[in-house]
Image (tube, rainbow, N blue to C red; front, side, top):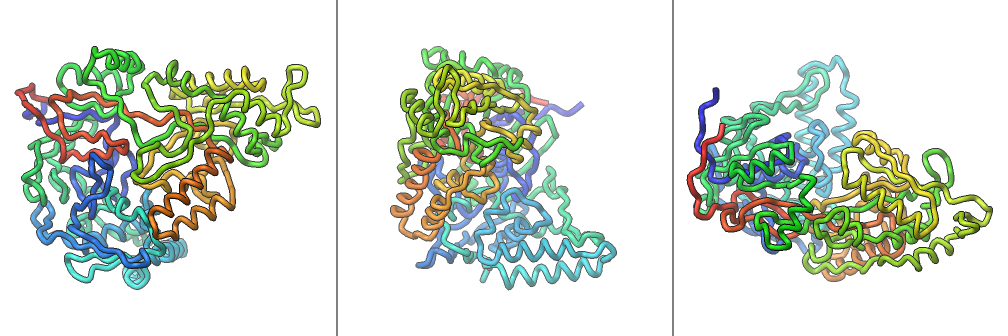
Length: 573
């Protein structure tokens, strides 16, 4: 039996187990939050304003053309084992992320660096051509050549231990924001190299995750990893060598993976958990009603940096070869304006979300002002459908050739009651307002994703959370060549406008261009129908737990959390 440990100052419940503690390999939100406890990047995000602030770097400068960034690192940085942290650790970590060997989800961030795409393509080709009987000598030789290729090709250098120079392929207005994301955190080369080898069979770098285990992992964040018992708990203790250790409020924090939503709420209400990071119980709408009437103070429904939408297939033909009516922007506008979003929020989601008429949540990005988007307007919806060539004749919507509007199918993932109910509600609205026949279809999550990629849908549920504080984290979804553009929306004018904005160094002019791009999407072309802007539902006692960010980006840093009037609590096992 495990020995009882003293209760941590703060206990946090996550809805899933941590997948990885390797910053370059993470992708899930709870992993991002955990990574910020153990590591720190050049910059961070202020929890009140959402603005970028210094972290491992004290200051930075950028060249007149917006391409060369020079970061000055703090001179007293240390890894938690006492080894000095230098700019070379950043170069090492970013090179890891750029290796196709690692298959990092956020490798795209690093492709902004000059020569990075060329290096990635070269390495991929070299590995593809590596002979199966290559042997260790040939594998080592390829790695030596890779190191030389990186140094000579990629615009990343450390002229001394406390200076990092990054040369971008083009200006990236949100570069400092990207630097705050965990995928760009440094890792300790002196430790990671002990768990790295080169395959004699493939020539690939093999990364063993052993360096991320408790008692082994070395970080530069506010906490160290004291214990990790998979599917049970993870314990963090104050890192006394952290650059700002004196301002860490809690000596110890524990996170518990509790997958069952009802169990998680019960653990919170019993005092075993101080912060429930995602309240998913089906009765949370009832809990929100209690909050609105002053009967509950520990449920917090916070605006999030995300938008709930339904995707419209913009391809000329459907997967079965039929002509796709949604290839016409007028049809898409008609369907968008026939959705009573407020009713869906009041009766289905029941969390007081803001009605969404745009992709980007208003007010979530300082200085950016998007378009108004299309309103709920049944009369205009019918007019748009008429103008698109579809007329109601003897109770049947048909085109000039007398062909009936095909039965509209709304696709959603089978594991979501929320999207099941939203899909049914919209199908009913379209039938009543536009006169078209509608049905819903569910698929398991894997099959649902496959259907989106294949274009095997007419309308499908979707959603997006921004990765960084810039409009492009949303607008790039509609680029004709973007990997997340499952709708296959394509407008050369839209792509050109984004390209023009990317080259604009004046922030005001750039935001004006991006606002025009969003207007093109949300007022005119409608590749998606936004329903509401997401909220995140936390549970915590506001007079006990401090330091939680309520800014829409919800960038949470465990090192900023504190407890007021901490009392003794039972031990956990």
